[in-house]
Length: 430
Image (tube, rainbow, N blue to C red; front, top):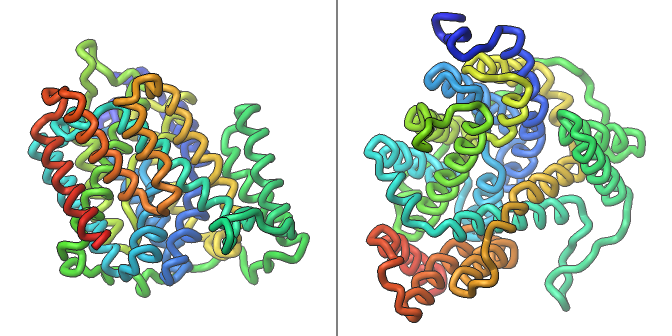
């Protein structure tokens, strides 16, 4: 362990790393329940999705831990899974096989950009306000999905949406939301996971959830979804925008998470550069490609890694511990499989809050900044599409900047992004 993870060099111990790795697992284990519930809305086999979600988290987390020797964890990303299910498959009527192909292509493109160093140019080309708006918009989007899954928000012919009836699932979902919120305020580790488990238990008590016939069993086969991706379909002109959206969101989600966690783990050099960032991004891209082959949406670095770092994690050993705990979860798939949508809905809402709170860093007093940021944020939930919010954000930024006469603010890379956005908008609209 000393030779592989260099524990002394990082001033840590095996015990410290194990505690940190276990803490990270507890804070992000909710994805085992949430991801299958979201992706199964596309018609994908839920049992297979449970197994694939766990395997993707295991492989991605172990890869970044051993390859980069950092205490970070990976799993299918929140927001990206919603984009996959509700925008591409249910919204644009793309088959889930083709959508997996889109994830695969975006992962390959992300890997190439990382190896060539182009990712820095893309990051620098996008204004900070639009990066922050992207996170906030996705937060609103998955919160909306959470309330819809809970049953609190329903269809309304007159007003598009309205409030649903307070039946048992809705009430239990709200109890779960309040539970998570209180535990978050109290800074209890694993609050989201505790909320999901409590809500599921209440669902069993009130006969809204069936008791599993077994607690431990062989995990469901991944055969129904593994290697079913349609790569050629994903390369069609109409899905170029989707590929770009996946790549863009994953790029900024990963970089934002890596930067935040690197500061927590004292991995930032005096000049502001981050140690091993290339390896971390390469691991992120590889995990996405492997995950798409297995049958899940984009795998990305999780901000919950910061909880493990706060508990002392400093090396890849902590990530290895997190990965092993994910693997052990495969034995408990019967329990995982009974968790209902109203129990995972509160997790979506709380994660949405986390993603939305950086909106305070956007200067809404400056309309040149405010309008593109606002359009990005508001159009994601209103159009049920992350990519639509991004397109209007990019195009409005370029247009307003041009009319204002600030030509120099628009880099060549931003012009390319704008052109791709315009093409995607034209194809989608007409």
